[in-house]
Image (cartoon, rainbow, N blue to C red; front, side, top):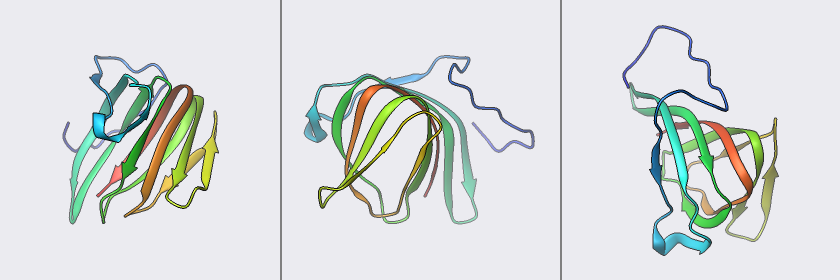
Amino acid sequence: MTATAHLLKLTARPEGTPSVDHPRRERLLRGNPMRETWNLVDEGLPAGQVYCGVWRCEPGHWRIAMGPTERELFTVLDGRCRVHDATGGFEEAGPGEGIYIPPGFEGAFEVLEPLTKTYMICE
């Protein structure tokens, strides 16, 4: 998708067909959850890229690593998740709550209940 000059509303039930994938096998800690992504914005920035959309996932747990300039802010619409840091701490989020994941973050993402979230990733 390209840059747009109109407003974009994100909903828990977006139209269209999502891209479907699973976490890479070497990152799996538990399960093999199906992930559906409706990436509604894929736009170049003066110094990077921004992605924005709706993401849905089945329960599971896998390792994540943000790149040195990559960051994500997401808000949970339905379900529950935890983002675990490398030192054993975590933040849990449910409907109406969000988590910011900073550049260079390493840890794990755990879906506790079927999850739907909106997200914005900048790199």
